[in-house]
Image (cartoon, rainbow, N blue to C red; front, side, top):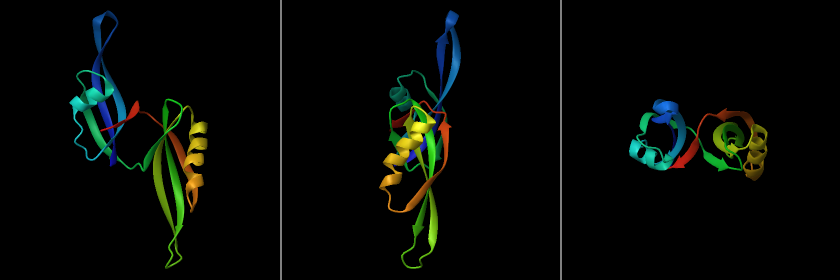
Length: 136
């Protein structure tokens, strides 16, 4: 499965029967980029959804903890090649849902970093501007 950044738009009725165009970002886990507007409408509960863009993103996994904010955590592994003894750096990105940045890092380290055999460290954390992570 792959992860895709999907930007959708829809019209929302606001005060005095005016319509406002709303744009929202989602992350969708899917086999391929054949994500259609009908399915996005069904997943989000919105009507008349238009897909503005779909882009594949390099995410290893999504971790869900208490909270409603999403963060991208970059993790660097140091892995030794058994044959050559050369050390190779591998970087992976994870999406973490948490209540704030500090808890995202604490929960991520507790769940991921402690369970790996190789030396690893978090290189960056940033808030992600998405509404939700959805299955396809």
